[in-house]
Image 1 (cartoon, rainbow, N blue to C red):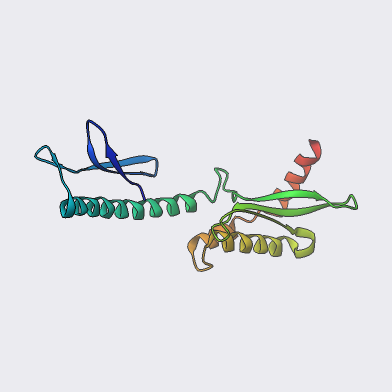
Image 2 (cartoon, helix red, strand yellow):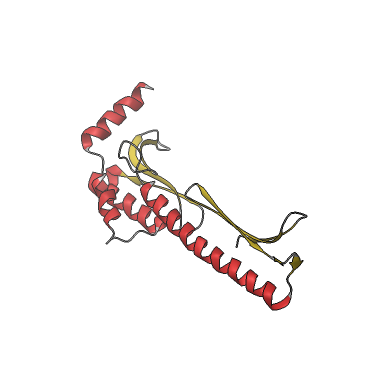
Length: 170
């Protein structure tokens, strides 16, 4: 809750403040009437009004966060943020192509990581498993339009080969 009681020489009352999509919403609810401080039921009514406004702003903030999270799934090149192609070096020394997923999980409330082997599952199977892990932790439905966009963002074999060559040069 972002309702705060302010008691200064210049203002006595409640301030409601929330940051929504980069914009600060800030409103004041005075606890003074005719130069005197209000008490009892009048004070409770002002507090209830401030809390009601905060609840409206909280809903707006949650909606803006959800929208921002959906638009942040793809980078400027159209690649899925959080799913990377990597050449993983196994303990034996062999290099295996994998999709590495590292994302902030809405499900677990922390950063989660895993890898999916392209050699084991094939390109399409590995991508499907990677996206499955991704949508599970981002709480995205398989019926959502964004799911199909994620599935369509699968890199091609040519793109993966180009990435492999680029990594060998480094």
